[in-house]
Image 1 (cartoon, rainbow, N blue to C red):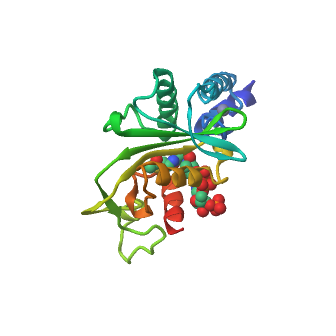
Image 2 (tube, rainbow, N blue to C red):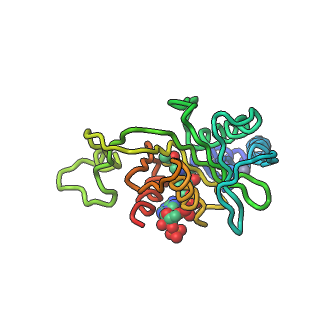
Image 3 (cartoon, rainbow, N blue to C red):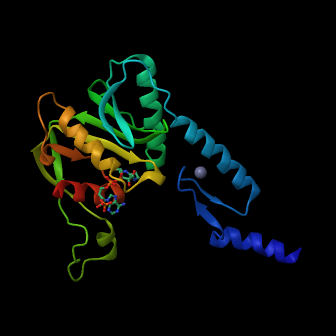
Length: 225
Ligand code: ACO
Ligand code: ZN
């Protein structure tokens, strides 16, 4: 009895046995039945939300060996817009955005990457913008002597000088188990060729808003090439 009590105490204090599910992103304790039950519930709801049933007249903007990209516009039929909104909510939840509304829903284009197994494995939310502020400090830059730890950890800061831009990527997300397969890269390529009719946007005309560390690494790599 005693030793099992001890184990539970350890679990709380050291997050002993905490695991992160690579597919739904939930952090839970594998050793705790309640936690596991909660995880299974969340996991199933999550996957259900990413199921793609499809509709007639879907707007396929690209097709690949491993899936397709579907574009949803604000004036599309309600069921299409609803599906896009539901996915956006799942993504916001994973990104830790709480109830952040879009700055202008009428100007928003949502791109979904749908796998051959009819699952939504990528989502990109693009908005029309007029200007953006360039990120200044380079990650990996050597902190100058005397620079305090706090400043070092505040990964980057932005210029105060606005620069013209056309398209703002307010969210980009790829399903955990499908990362590093070029899905994000292909979604941004497609945004560049379809966002503005008849133009292929340069990387300078695209701005990634408030990127996460993953988002920053991806954007840096993407914009170089
Ligand atoms: N670390 C280092 N380099 C990376 C990373 C990473 N986590 N992700 C992408 N890259 C670089 C790599 O060089 C990669 O090429 P390689 O795999 O040949 O080395 C290149 O970018 C292209 O990567 P993709 O495979 O196209 O990117 P992926 O499909 O994995 O999606 C994304 C990247 C969207 C950032 C994904 O990791 C993700 O969904 N993360 C969680 C959600 C998130 O943080 N999204 C960004 C929010 S910021 C915003 O929305 C504006
Ligand atoms: Zn899970």
